Image (cartoon, rainbow, N blue to C red; front, side, top):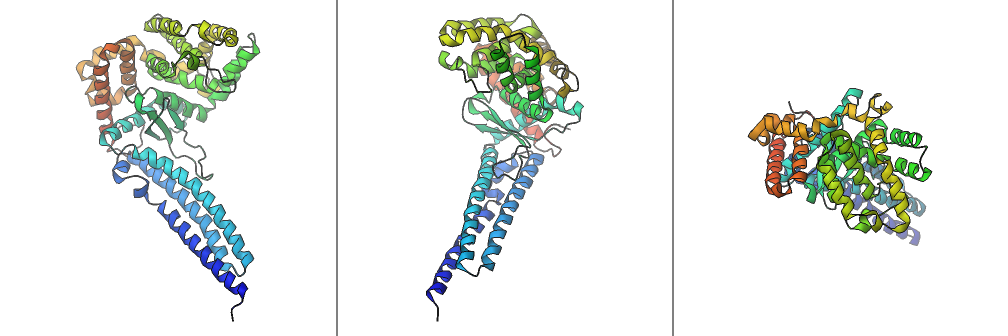
Length: 432
């Protein structure tokens, strides 16, 4: 005759088995690639990128199922209420791990799903390619592999990156790709993706740390607070410099349009933040252009920037600090772009990526040489994709009255490049 203890064990066991079956089904559902994103969205990925993502997501889910198998084995061996209590604790642990894996899967699912529309898919594939090309001059000479890139659409004002090799939410998997978000408003001027690949390059080479040390050691004669801030901002200064070296003034103009909000926003100072004060950050960009290209449209835009954000409109207590930082801007430009660094093989950033290739003169020469075929020729689009981004961005900054024409040209370039990439399986940094 069953005792109350036997009945309690039976009921507890039934409840535990039901929960196990529920989470087992849920874990297997995460393995369904067709439920993560539609087949059309997967098809819009370059095959190499798609294969890497599938492989990584499969490994993530397999690891989760191994966690489940441990709990299931405890359940099979349970002979007492105390044993079932331990199984129940294991289910709670599994649920927490499931949530972390779900976050990982959901992130990539959303990123892939942003390509469901064929036009958007081609555009983002083109950005994958351009982002990969931007990393080649620094990584290839140092025999560093170029990580595959997945660009996806996202809301907000600024771009961001989930770097390749970064540990993901599940605590087990590392990101198989550099996942770069481009905002809806910036699709036609996507210079920010090069800023983000600058972050990826910096992480691979240890650039941020070396630049921070370089700034500190060369600013010993200035207010220690200023020197420490420049070092604290090294990662964003590096990424901005990387964008400038690759696409020239187009990166500076686009940055000023994004970070130039109200005076309160532009002078906002976070003592612990990694982003320079926006006012100073944009002045750095103008100074980069002046250092490499001499006088130009950036001087006029800097005049307008200062007129829109006069120092007197900054918080009174911040004005002396801003004045000191502003005075040091030319030195920061030289240290960042012209100083040889170990991470670049004892070369400077400007030696690895020559900003002169995207100077206004060079871009206008390219435009003249290619003529009307510049936005239509597969040869020019594949060979000069980065410089085309630089050219359209420069024209956008200097000829705003032609913005509709420039947007149409940019879209045509990205569509042709994206469609040219889709059949290839050799990775998203080459077209062959």
